[in-house]
Image 1 (cartoon, rainbow, N blue to C red):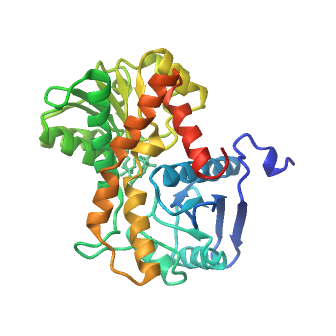
Image 2: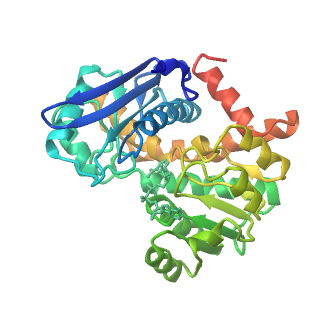
Length: 354
Ligand code: NAD
């Protein structure tokens, strides 16, 4: 058996805890990458992993990504992530959520959880019965919190506009062709915002009906999932899976810009360089997709302070995403370094690991 710190995705994580609760059948991994800037915050993914090593890889990679994301968003929080290993039927029970809440509570505020893939607001409400260190809870009108998807979509929309201005010199989205992979909470939100600006949308989802419905709503065109990477476009916007920017995926791209919300888009770090070699401008995923964590962390911080949260503060912080991307691209141009390398170096500096 190999030690966890010999794993390829190990990055000096502060704490990695395996939680097993016999009574409920919960098995989970909580990974805290860094608490340098504050409590480690990041959602919980509920997923069936064919191979438990895949769960550990996800926890290690996603928690590091959260450290970078939260630092680059200027939030006073560190980075962490949890994964709950579901059986092949994806069964998630109330008892498992309670046991998970107890595990979060035992960390005494070092970890703050929220929604990720496979989790709902209702799940967070169940977890909140056992711990206060949870966000993404239903929000009242005018408050921060609730479903992070629309906030993530807003940040990506603003980031795409900044990328189009930087790379193509255009200050309007009218007629700009955007290929959107994934038409869920984030991809759907991005497409709707772009449609209002007159962008020319090409949409794909493994749920073909969902892509078709979004196409009808936005005046876009739905294509098969196999076609979306090859679509000739100005912007390719990945909003479904991670690791799609691999050797094969990058070779298929026919775009000037990659800017979307999926986490961990680069299969490996060197794929950022490959994009750069092809002259494609990359918006580092953890910078452009921070809108959701900005929203839920503002909710958490306000609640901890006993203050009301302010949705305008969330909007103000999301509006800073394009400026941050611009700073990365300008440094990238000035120093002839790919944007992902510039962003990683900035993030490492911010979390005290420069
Ligand atoms: P979602 O489940 O609402 O939507 C994902 C969509 O992608 C679904 O419609 C699904 O059918 C589709 N999909 C899955 N595999 C696909 C494939 N191979 N090709 C095309 N479509 C495919 O999820 P979401 O909340 O919209 O999140 C999308 C991505 O953004 C994820 O990678 C997530 O980790 C990331 N992200 C989400 C948020 C957020 O606030 N929701 C924040 C940061 C990052």
